[in-house]
Length: 388
Ligand SMILES: [Zn+2]
Image 1: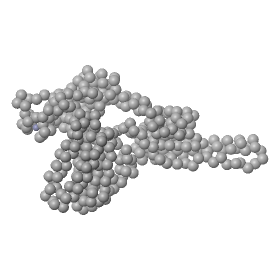
Image 2: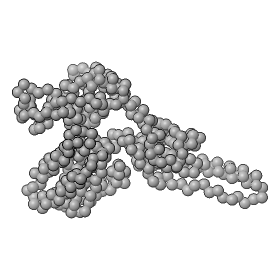
Image 3: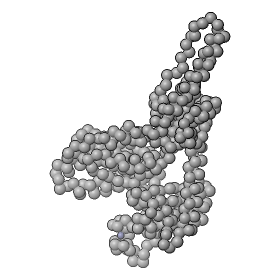
Image 4: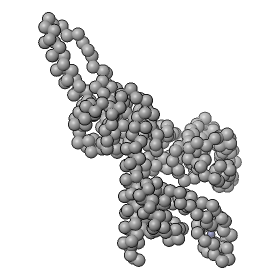
């Protein structure tokens, strides 16, 4: 998840533009669980998108030559790719020897840009939209910091670097007395140490944009640490869990997974609850939300959907117009697009196309997995939308 690290993103944003040397930015949906991609559909998609850019630069020989070599590089990478993530992201400018590529575990809309600098906006938006969690794992001598998002964990090395307590030999004859002094000093030191971590944490939360915190470590340490935290940080803490400070990142992830899972399901329950209420309340004049496939599709076609919400696993056949990109759940009698009269094409997964269209128009898509929320959404037509 390099691209989601502030340093990487910053470096990409600061990539110096050079005259006549644009950067090719590629966002390609490669999700291997999709039937169309299993048959290599993403390669066709890439070809189509590259052709569009090609048509816009072909009049300029210099630019065309420049574009061709960038396009060739991306194609050669995609040819050998064995998809694991959901979206392939690449930025390249062959003439400048500039290459970046990564598979990310979330779905972003297919898009290609050929501009002076890497087009990172979809990444920034994803970072805003998805829940990010900061994890502090600590004991009395050491603290570690992790960022968790999209079900993956990353340790930020040396994020909290405070030298461990020094067990100095105390000079003095009265052994008992020096023990006591040491203990008292050590207590003060402990408090100081935990406060220091709290201070450092304040910066990390801002830097890594983690609105939720999970504290991990021996119970008495996390509870004291929590008590010493500034109120603003205390409010971000969603849970405390026991864990050894030397734990592997994967162990940390496994331990917090149920906490995150539970939180995400709770948010889904909330979303579906709001959706159904808003749709039932919506009057003819002030429509805020819709339920059911047909009304949702027409709202999408009109570009009115702000958030599409659908029950996980719900899919259906349908039609789309390759020319004006309208999507339909049933075909009109003459089998032509009602908007532009082109021939319609069939799709096996209309919900997928609908999501793609919503994402492309800057909207959001919520796939509901919570059992409780699914039941509620299913009795209300499996799919719904909040309107702009
Ligand atoms: Zn059409």
